[in-house]
Length: 190
Image (cartoon, rainbow, N blue to C red; front, side, top):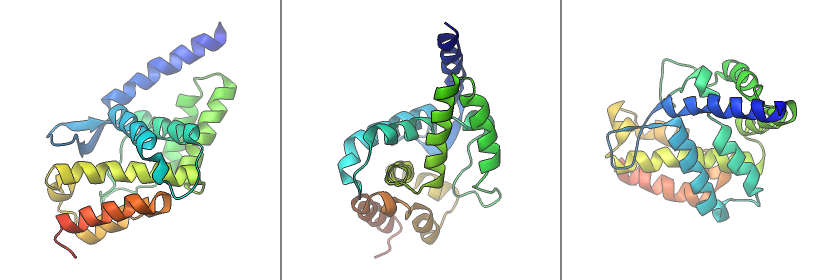
């Protein structure tokens, strides 16, 4: 019973993810996406686009990564990738959040979730590279569908968009080619 109670406490806690607003807007919309919607969408993208990974991947592990990677934002908050005033590597704050939130789970599950989260953050495995590719690809699609979305709103230049999204290539060269073409087309760059 103690195990179940810990798991339920965690489930209640992660409901807070629905309240973490991202800068990105939903497709063809002026409403901001929340972290829970983002995580669900990434999970679906992994299922649909998984065969475009550069390498063989453990699909379940990638799904775990995209579903839990932003849970730390319950405590640490969302950092806009194009923000020039904040450090985008608030890993210490996020690690503290990971330990607190995942620590609500039974010890074995907590350790697994922390390890999966760290693997995503480090981005060195095939699974982490593909998960990160999907994490960067979704906002590309959103911004294109919203006439530039946050790129236009924050006057982000083409070069910066390319630099922040080229990590997609490490997970999927096919998805990167598509992304790069869409970005170049949006910015009228050939």
